[in-house]
Length: 197
Ligand code: SF4
Image (cartoon, rainbow, N blue to C red; front, side, top):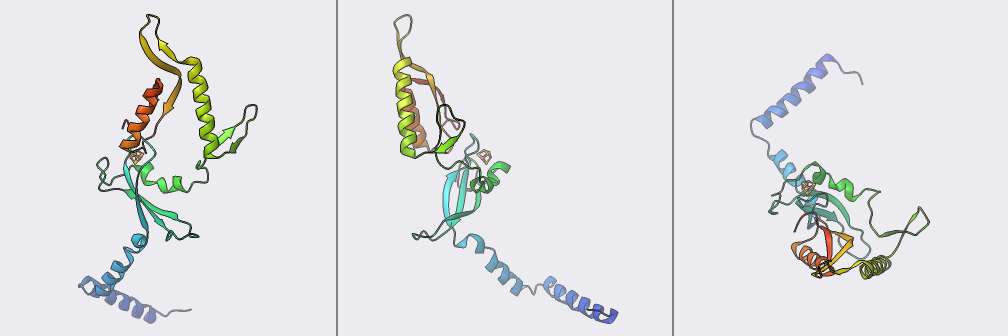
């Protein structure tokens, strides 16, 4: 559509007048609109507290998901931010933690146990029961074979040096405590729990 110079000046003047009204404080309509829009994103989301899984700092995060928890509804995480009430980070997150929504929805994220049979280079999905039974069996076999009850001087040491254990920063204090007790009770010395909780 062709616009004459006169039409252009009229439209510009109208726009200027509107913004001037806003500048003079007549912004009630705009404020009401903003107030309606701002909480919209998280208003109907479910808030879940958790810990960032990336590093040993173990910052607290708030995870927001949609889905009304009815049987056929599929929940979906839509937003992650720092937990202002968490004593570690007080609401802050580094770039990795702030970008954890990408990690959550990554197609490469491992969500279930995988097993590579001897002699093959392919991993296949297995059940948790299978994975836990297999781990338990291998741990017992290795411990039975390599447990050291006494050292060369006959002093009781109860060491198991051929297996190590890896914890994680997402563990709560209670889970970390139980993990520590279990690992030390077996005699394992090689133990890394990342967040040292
Ligand atoms: S937000 Fe950053 S510093 Fe905090 S736990 Fe995650 S990766 Fe570590």
